[in-house]
Image 1 (cartoon, rainbow, N blue to C red):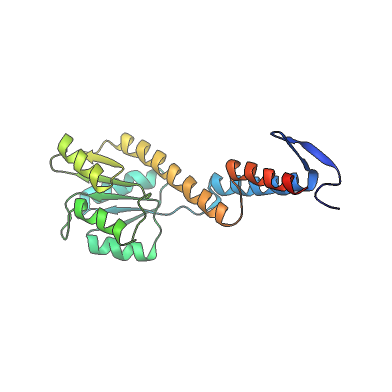
Image 2 (image 1 turned 135 degrees about the horizontal axis):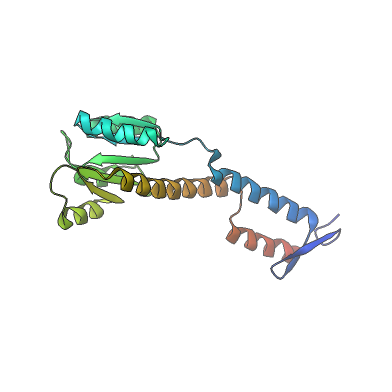
Length: 196
């Protein structure tokens, strides 16, 4: 049975496709939906802070919200963790013993240790005014919090950032496996219709 023959399905936009092609495309969409619904294992959230009490407080907050966490106390320890783990987010203290997060974050992106799309939230016990928030944003941070941390706001931002990051990763992985997004699906449907 050729592409132009056999039972016809309802139109996709202005294009009528054979049922077998529509079923194939629907399966690909279902695969994409499953991938984006969170069936991929969640990465950890890495907390980098040399103040034990602060790091434990953030860790307790995140684990109570269902996140898996890892901790590092220095930039060097973070780089080591990044060589073994694929985190869903980083929470970095601005002032670490071996570097400032404002210097470390751009270096991590430049060297490929992290992708610029990875959510990074900076925290500080020091000055947290407008100038520091702007410096954090210029360094590549998605969010910035002074201390004491507003736990509810941190969790809300983290949820939004991690959901967006995981959805982007899932879409990229799905497209790499030949699964189509709505845009590429419509384009593929036009290609197939033109063939037959």
